[in-house]
Length: 146
Image 1 (cartoon, rainbow, N blue to C red):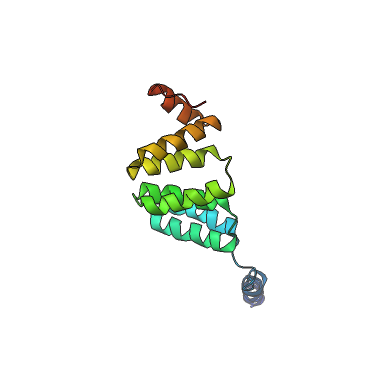
Image 2 (image 1 turned 135 degrees about the vertical axis):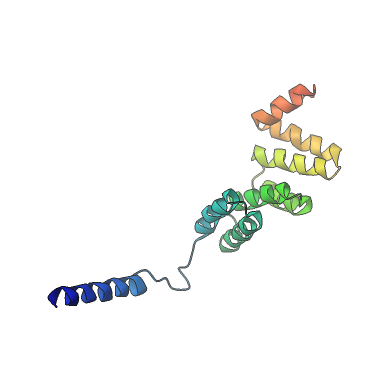
């Protein structure tokens, strides 16, 4: 009988801790980084739209979270949603004009949209900023970026 009583008390205490000790107020909720990290799990599991939704939540929590914009753009690109990808890459470049990979990604997006002139400009900018993959690509097609 004593064992049963101790077991019951333990269950009640554990439940109390779980209910009240781990609950968050509305203000605390998940952080932008929480949403961002969770998005990777959905990408790995093959659910890109859910990842986009989580990146959007991260951006709503922190509008300056440029990695969330960039990664959302990459997912849009892989889904062939080029206009949405372009919008995200534009935001990243506007706020951080030294991010080489954003220029390379925007260049790829512009190329898919048929804007080869501006795509090449972005590839050259990415190469100037030091993006090694873009430099190798431009070398392979004999284009200088200096």
